[in-house]
Length: 406
Image (cartoon, rainbow, N blue to C red; front, side, top):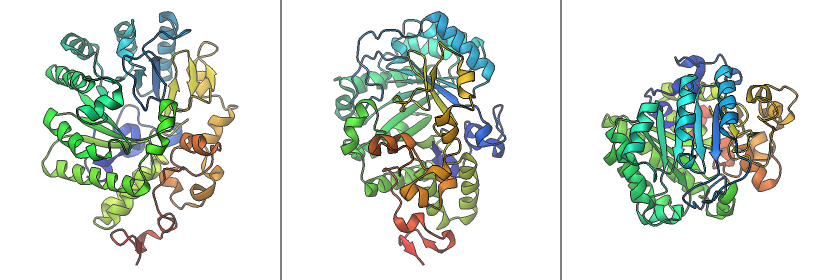
């Protein structure tokens, strides 16, 4: 996760301590990236009222067997609290579809866990919004894939956009912090400007622009991923918008997610205009080793049946199950080969990632995307949009505007 507001615009945000450790203040500040506890994404249930074309859990509107019961969920929450994770993200499927959603959320808050929700927003009426606010969620992330019909096609339901927008407005009415989530593909690339307008018009507090990950139904969308040139253009537009927000003193936190190459790209852009800020950004990004939410380090996933994964997109690899032993024990098991490798990944990288001089900033980007496309977890991430010249560049001799060495 790359904080454009922090790194490119130079503004602080409330979640800086999760990403930048000793360079920021916060109760969960870690001395090093490897020392931090993970943010845990819990897929509460796979059941969902929509049928999104890029769903990483391939969810449908039906019951799924063997999902964690209430007693098991409470025991898991107690362990996560004792382990002192910095935050728990309740996800799905559609988490608000879970029959015990608020009972679970309230118990998590009693245990001191910081909570967020990832939801499609269509089930949030005024009553639900009040319950969310009263429970004490730090923010609610609502997914949009465009405005109007574009969103409805992605979401598999006519009227889904208006229902989600009503959800945003109900939450804003009770002064609940709201985030917007948008996944970039060729099907909605041109909707970026309308998303910018939506965020400004509705007073949305936070927006995350996700790069496509080829998992679940999203694996069938690999051909619809942006080209490298389109990705660069999208990031340029997002940066320009973040700069505009700063000029207009609009307090919107802007982030990009699931492609750590964005950090290097921002650094190269900053070198041309503000070398001091560029150096500050480099230090922060390198502390992260590519991103606060690196798979197997800063982020973890517990699925609906209790399986633990390196991240929520990595469903093909199960580390263990919390019904057998607690998450805290699974996550700190030094004999687990994949976790050990992910936490010491740089010497294992191959291809362009192995030869790239930006490894300390990018960390080889998103390993599960390399695995899904090549079968080799250490192969180059196909979503890297830097040129061969850029990955071999001497920074002080690079001209961003001319895309060449000076």
